[in-house]
Image (cartoon, rainbow, N blue to C red; front, side, top):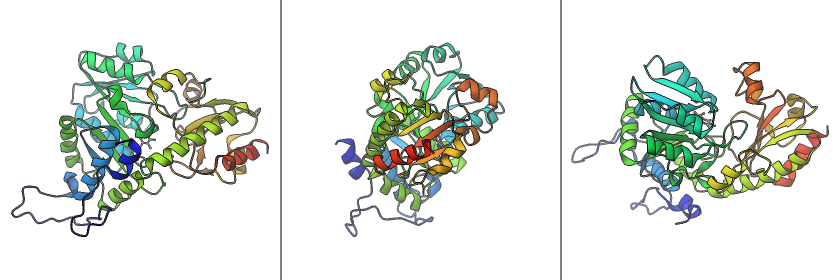
Length: 374
Ligand SMILES: *Cc1c(COP(=O)(O)O)cnc(C)c1O
């Protein structure tokens, strides 16, 4: 099956009782157990709605098994702690989601897990591996500069050195990037973003091989961050339109990136689909589409003034929804990062991050043009 067809038909629950074509919402938190092999319980990740949606995501990513969580951070924290023990070492790309960065900094040391943050370069990552390294953790493209890491090379390094590779594939989605086909071991998503896609659902997922999924599920049952039936259903429903949403969003993003790149009021555009972007070549070799996130730097206008002039695009946190949203990383995602570090990373006060939605690209460009030209 093609991925577009999988979005609609993969996974799900076959309702033999009513023959309805959608998965029913099973609200029970208590299931009878006499004469039954299984013990259904939401926190064991084995209820019908959880299994229906996990099966769909596994098929989209080409994974054997997975676990669906109550947030992206629940998926990230649980997976990392399931796969790392006291005494282990993790090599972590320095440019990752702020919440993941904070989780590692705040808790690994306390738990006896050592870690090295390295810049996103395959050689630097390999050089940081020690005899007790158990995980390489990466993200591509990154937030908010849309830098691209060579996933194939990282996966090859992991295999050669006997280290598990984990990727946060939130920005790319399974429509634009399939890390398993590039050799990665574990894929994590904040389902709050593109998988949910309507800015009304909070969830996360980790998908991988059977043996690794079993380890993650066991830890997850202890930590308790499972996803409820209603949200599982909403996620499953959203996934049916994932490919058409992301395709349209990706197309719009390229159009907007090309428009911004030519505009005199724009200093710089970061989008891996532009030939001028440093990650363009690698992105072309590992992504089937360049995604719908981009960022750009204004020349003269301040970020706040610019955002106040927008009429369609909403200044809002989070990303990946059908509505186009914008934010300035300096006062939002990277507010806690010192000015000096922000400068070194290339996150100026005039940088704006755009999450492109499914609206008409002409309307979006007109909105941006109006805001740029005051
Ligand atoms: C939002 C996000 C997360 C965290 O997900 P939550 O659902 O907010 O917990 C992790 N990684 C990336 C890349 C994200 O954008």
